[in-house]
Image (cartoon, rainbow, N blue to C red; front, side):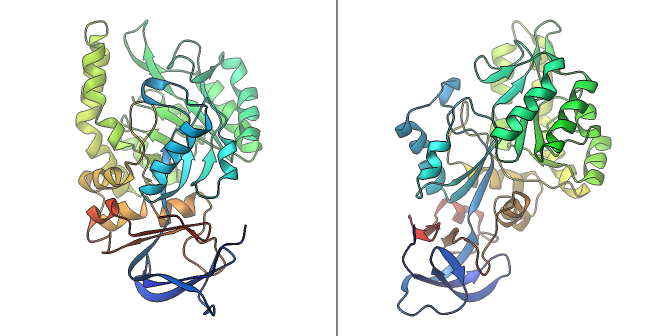
Length: 361
């Protein structure tokens, strides 16, 4: 649907240059458009924010949210926080009906979580034996939007602690299968033991990554493997530990240790050159709309403020194949009164939202 002609002016980020920006037929142009409505003057124009780890269709406590009203509510909370694109890292609900709603963020899906039998949150994942993993990866690669999500580790009740879900050969075959289908692969990991096999098999991204070591960080940097630390979810680790303490004391100890070192891990990854992106893990145990909190957490962990903002905006968009504020690009941008690189708190207060060339906030 063709939207109205719009005009905005302000400092365009990341370049930091004051420009006039017009929107014609839903797309950005720097050529004046006669008769365009001026919808923002002054301020800072940022490429639409990205939540690079989100779960639309999962509510508090892992409850499935399948009704349109509930799905829209989750997506609208993200949009109103300035998030105009989501990487959905696994959902049991088919959310493609939302693609018909032009007032909602773009969603890049990873299909269903893939986990070993009885080794993940009940009813969230497709549960598979190792020999079945590669074939199901192909299925999810074809259903998703260029991503597949593995559960790399979870508590093993037999050993009372975190443990890998898959043998190394199954991981290697699965990642190879996804790449043959043209999809990238990411994996949930909290601990360390699953990481060497995933990274050496050529995985494209690690979610959470709290168990990363110096050697693994170096290998990720050399390979270009990304990490999405989800620090607003990692803040829940002490609660996870307390809940499991009585039955699984080793697990509780592990989770507290991982929480204590989580900031240092993120800082080491960034300093080594690992691509770091902002994701909240919204859905289940984390509310939607917390991308500004995640950016602040990345900064507190050691990323410079501009790098933390970039991890939720222009660098994340480039990573996911989404354009920024450039000639001919779809008009997805957020306006802030002050420069978010100098005032991270401004991310909590978007002044104007333009999505698919229409003002939505």
